[in-house]
Length: 282
Image (cartoon, rainbow, N blue to C red):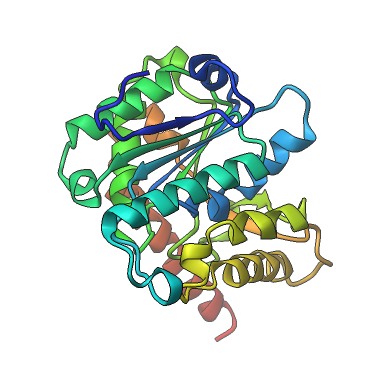
């Protein structure tokens, strides 16, 4: 595998040929930053641990150089922070028994450029290298600009695949904006309550973020628990933890369907649901 950035990192925790490891992947998460995978895709990681023949793969698109840093990490340069975050992501891949972990090392600025040919080319190569049952991406209403840009580059790459190479299902997962506001029949509940000890360890692997003042571990586990409890008002909790997602598969199948149009539809249907409920009891 040859990627655009010379410092791109290809890591196979169990050793062996990277191309063969990628080909085994059945659950693939493509995220913007180191630790996004572990926030978004605990359900996929768990599926691959629980089901023989399944394999999880992770892809981080950006290099992590612009991360906030305080405390023990305050003195680090952008170059040093890139190395720290790369090793943290490798550690998470070992903990989660990922088949492969790739870090493409693009800058956020590059990813945000319309088209971003080098980024899309890398992603096309990755998607051609495996035939995943499910791909986890960022969701289109995320409020982090880099997350949204990575989502768009991923969709551009997936749309270049022939129909018989496209993944079975593509899901947009919550990170920097939750999806509790989406109407119930459009939400996908990802079972993130399994392997709770591993889930905590995966998040704690990113010490540069947590020790630096961002308690992603507590926030992520708390969100999953809250999602599970508030999923329904008239039944006991079915799952210990839920990560909400929306189905992005139609955006891959139909290149003419605009991403902004799709996202606007989600908010419009929420508005209609709120108005209908208020009017029905007025």
